Amino acid sequence: MGALNGYIGKVLRVDLSSKIIKVEEYPDSFYRQYYGGEGFVGYFLLKEVPQGADPLGAENKLIFAAGPLTGVPAGGCGRHCVGAKSPLTGGYGEAESGGYWGAELKMAGLDAIIIEGMSHKPVYLSIKDGTAELKDASHLWGMKALELQTAIREELGDARTKVAYIGPAGENLVLYASIANDLDAFAGRTGMGAVMGSKKLKAIAVRGHNRVQIADSEAFKQVVFWIRDNTPTISRGLRDLGTARLVKILDTIGGLPSYNFKFGSIKEADTIDGEVIRDTIFVKRRGCYACPVQCKREVKVDSPYNVDPRYGGPEYETLGSFGSNCGITNLKALAKANEMANAYVLDSISCGVSISFAMECYENSLITKKDTGGIDLRFGNTDAMLKMIELIALRKGFGDVLAEGVARASKKLGKATDQYAIHVKGLEVPMHEPRLKQGLGIGYAISPTGADHCHNIHDTLYITQNNYLAELQSLNTFTPLPLTDLSAKKVSMLTYYSNWMHFLNCAVCCYFIMSSSLVGFERTSELVRTVTGWNTSVAEILRVGERAATMGRLFNLREGFTAKDDTLPERFFDGMTEGPLKDVPVDKAAFNKAVIYYFDIMGWPDGVPSEGKLGELGLDWVVSDTHC
Image (cartoon, rainbow, N blue to C red; front, side, top):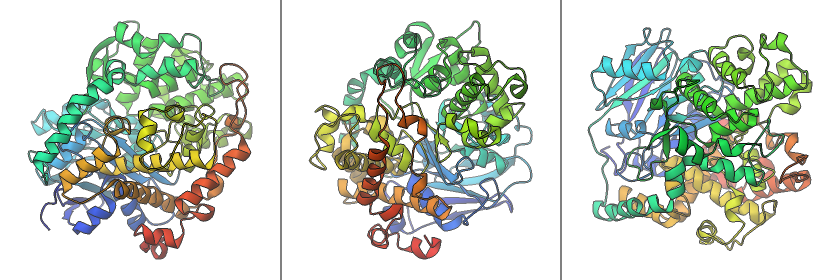
């Protein structure tokens, strides 16, 4: 098969046990069906990872996948997806990363890489213009991100090589270790770095010189010019302040997780928001491949911590997880925490929530200094938070307990700690409060990866008539709905929007750029048409997202998850005792009914996709292959 428009038509398979490397080709229909990114991950996990496989064993597969839009010269098209069976949840694992690595992978002549088996010694994979080679990485093992990236580029003799890598956290099998690239871009969630570490694969270096083939270059340019000319203006807040601009906004309305989700606001939240970063420690902005918005920050701190701007700067999730959720509002310390997480290559969300979990246990005398190795692990203790990041990454002392994630840590520490373990399906809850955004809470519960804020609805965008709602109204007759609404209509909103976000993970492209208030449904489908030449439509791309979400569901069902796992931590079914959300819980009865609404809309009776739905999605092969 020759190259497809938007694709290369080649998948690299690397067996680390046998050291066999081969290129595979798939029919055009495979690409149209599964698209790329999350769709490829779901397909290969269901097809090739045996039921009950050890996530950190040789049978698990680690898949790096681009999509049809990855690497085309348009804003928002630099992302890639990484997936495997998650060591943190035991179920479907997948995460996306921005930066430049995904685009370089396509330019190097590949749509995806399947890593299987395990190496007995550290290696890294070097790919240049379609040629792949495994190289010894014994001398790189133990390196943090910056020194590793520098060493590989020097060894390969090309400073423009893009490197996806793990740090010490992945080597030490921290269950929420990440895979990173470009020092500040992360496939952050579900523990993909631990899978990579278990295979003794330190990095994948890619370099390419080929451009992605585009079907209709003139029509493509028109879309690209629109993105270039409009998104920086529409996204001015994101460009100027990054996602850190959310800190003060959410704190004001009670949606900034604080003190391990006990509260939704914190005193002095305005000292860690985007404006303060801009006015104090900001150095410059940067972005991902071909991006006109440039939403990332570089920050520099000299005292009392030394923070290297090459590691970027803290974004909202990091400011919340290490900051307000740990009772900390020391901006310089949070910049240092961000640098440490980036250097060790840790998911800052899961790491911060694990620390805040321990802090609440400590303050309730469920753990003591005897457990923590003498660390005064109370809320607000900046030094303790920073020390725990290091101990977790190195699996030393009490860090070894927290490196397992809050679900496993609570089992080890005793049942009394379970109430403070804030997770869904084993994945720690991100920095978006479901008592504020209650549709998002349903999204947490039904997500195939566990609590996820990315392929999810954010209710605050749909409480008034605006551009976000107007875009959704092109799909259904939606009207503004209250934040606490959990009706079938709210769940319908969630379903449409979540399937859209799952599609973006297949394409693979940026949520911010392709947002329904920016590029939107029709223009994105036009972008796909101009790149691939397919007569695609909004209906088709939504179906692509639905197919991907369904494959994640099927994988979890096969691994023993049931509808009983589609719930929230009990904390969210109680109201806060103070703040804007005082006495505003998630109503449990309404929540349970809303989950059933989602199953109904998706064609998943009792949480299990029906044979008719599988047939409609072209997934009827899963029935016989997985016995779901």
